[in-house]
Amino acid sequence: MQTSVAIGRARRATTEGFRASVTCLRTLRSAALAIALSLAASDPALAQSRIGLIGDSMMVATNTDQMCGSGGEVLTCFEQKLGGHDLAFSHGGGAFPWSIAGRLGYGEGEILNAADDGEEWKDALAQAQRVTADPAIDTVFIQLGANDVCADYGHDFSNDLAETAAEIDATLSHLVTTLPEGARIYWSGVVDVVAFRDALADRRHNFAFRTCQGLWDLDFDTLTDEAVRSVCKDLDIPNDACDGLREFDVIKDALLDELVGFFVDAYNVETPCGAVLDGRNTQDDLDRARAFNIALNQLLEERAQHWSQAQDRVEILFTNRVFDVEIPPYFVSRLDCFHPNRAGQMKLAEEIWRGFEPLQAGNVAFFVDEFDDPDLCTQEFTTWDSCWYDYGDPGFTVGVDGRNRLEIAKETSNRREHFVARDLGDLSDKTFAWLSFNHKRQYFDDGGDYVILEVFQDGLWHELDIFQGGGNDRNAHPGNYYDLTPFLSSDVRIQFKPSSQGSMKNGDSVRLDNFNLFAWGPTAVPEPSLGGVGGAAVVVTLVGMGRRRVRRSSRPNPADEIRRA
Image (cartoon, rainbow, N blue to C red; front, side):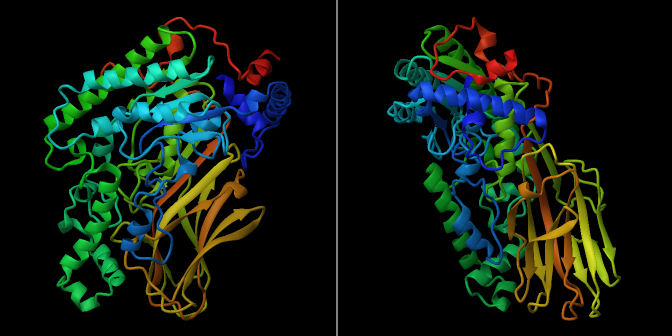
């Protein structure tokens, strides 16, 4: 365990919800707290320690919050959400103890995030200068380079490594000479950018386009009919004109303004990451980009080793683990199909930390159901030890519809009760959990038409949300996050309860999709090494690359005392 981890878990009592699930962990935290408070009292500099972050849009969690809320249309969702920075869920500097900053003990007010959208290694020195301008910073986390792979369409990368090496050296030279003696740099390699593309290109994963490739190419022929109707409503275009697509240019221009506006603001291009995401790329083009990605990671590792051995003021720890991490679609934002969503940010943090501390990474759980299979016990990506099940009075339809969504419909006008439930299982070893999904109200004419979402705790069902008329959703983009942390137990369940009123009848329904449960707990679950790809080291710290020199540090490690005890 690195020096700062136990300090953060001990002295940062303000981290909400961070509670041990077993007596052993409570005892360890109490011991660490006593040690850390004693250290802080004797060393005022310890309490002032801060961390600086150097990175790109992933570090500032761009488009990580992918949920559109309820009631609005898809164009409004893009207007409100595209380009948003969901900093609380940043893998590097988020507000939860699973982020890199959180694991190192840094909380609110102790993180300087110098990262920004579109940043490359050419921007790293300026970020480093911003970081070191704060004298309290004694730890730096770097993850940068994805945008160096995301060059313009047709780029050949032929001279890029030499230029990048010079940019890395300028940045590291500044950091190791300017940070206080005893500082630490945690440094991660670059994700497999082409793997992101391959996982999403042919899938319908965006709220408006039939495929992610259609979104990346801004191919408006691939807009879904539901999205078109939703934009029509937002623009006050009558239904007959919308159905006949007589106003298609108006629809297209409105969407184009939002999407291109985001891409230009963030990346100064009208379509992003052309060398990887452009639909004109051949397999040779993609192989060239991936080869550069691998070579870049090898360069990062080599320069990290060089700067570790060239000086003894600052300790440098490096890992390339994230390159080999599988990127299933449920880790990727539905807003743009290429940034991590909240679950993806948590996964990134977990895997990067495993590269630094394999036995202290905690544990994560992901349960996903996108209803690609009509069998209510089968999921495409993850396996739940349960099925969707329904019970209660007759007169209801429950099943996967023709658009691969879970339909919950009331057919009868009689006052009947029915329930659709899912057991989420034993989450008692987790300290945080969230659920998200999309919904579409259909034929909800008035307030008597509704479906209630409930969660089970201590023998009672508690209401989390209600999807109610009058009002319907033309597109299936509405959705929210639900914090299940207060309901964690060995028996977590959710259920949907349709209205029993007579006004809900004749197929009045809600359609549900893209269920994503993601949870984290502090208990370590050791995991074998992923294995290298293309010569890139995956679980590498500079402790393993050369001699480990003892560093003088202003941040003692209470965990070392605990282990000795």
